[in-house]
Length: 86
Image (cartoon, rainbow, N blue to C red; front, side, top):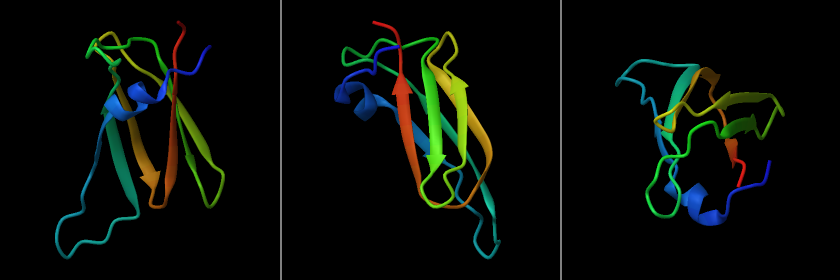
């Protein structure tokens, strides 16, 4: 798989679940949508996220709409990587 250019990584729309006021959370959900520079969705892209402190890594694939989901991620700082053929 060839890594998609920086324009794609900027086009990845991410949403991180925000804890409710007063509640403590130790996990979060991450939802995203992969699009290329023209705005077309990118299905079957390999999406990986790794915790910068622990090195733990999770992988997913975008669906036919370019959407992907990671659930119950421990709180922390992460690096997100997207790869797709072509």
